Image (cartoon, rainbow, N blue to C red; front, top):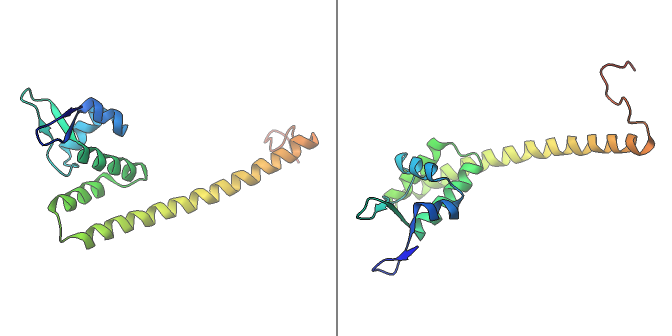
Length: 142
């Protein structure tokens, strides 16, 4: 990390990868896909440099992708942010639709967890009672 003339922190691609958990390859891919809100600056030697704002944005991207936001939606969101004020309603709609998808996924996972909890209980009871041998064994009849 260095400090530029305007007192803004500047980071190398390796430092950004470390801070965001993204690989260097993914950072380059995100740049090619136009997912950043400002163009990546380069040193006189052609090396990419990033700012704190870039890192903050990338951390948002990481969470949106981890939560299942399609790349096309993330690209659209980045384009809206880059355009600046005046499209907040469209950004809100995009984020709200994603939130609804995440809520649906959470509900489905909670149902799965409930079934697993129930099954763990059944096996635990049989194990404690010494009757777990052959439990749900398709090779043995009732």
